Image (cartoon, rainbow, N blue to C red; front, side, top):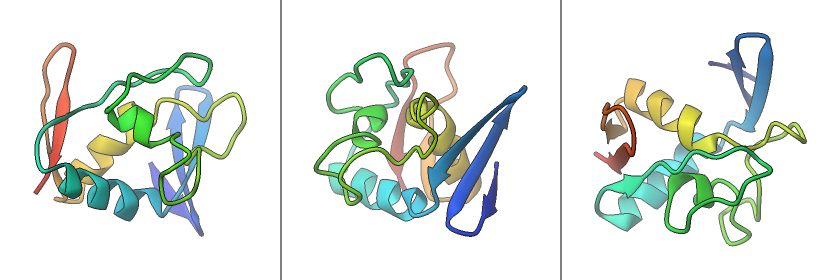
Amino acid sequence: MHREGDELVCTVGSTTLRYQARAIEDLHAWLAAQGDWVPLGAADEQKPAAPGTVEAFGRAEDNPVGGWYGLRKGYRGRFGMYLPPLLEALGLVELEHNARNNRVRAI
């Protein structure tokens, strides 16, 4: 994942996903406000996100951008899969690394 201007670019195989770069600060602030572990809840754009998950935050109408952080229609989902590891690498969160049902919390 890298930054191009106001966008985060995530390349997975031959697929490129783009998210608003402000997602880093917004997600960290939201996680800090939650005050505890939050499930990732990663899901494709076409599938509903489980309530109270990072994925749900990434597409919620009441988040700071008023909806999707993902920029490319059809590839806006998976916010809960790709953003938390970036925040972990930046030292902003603690992330579980289990086989499934991982959670994240702000540091």
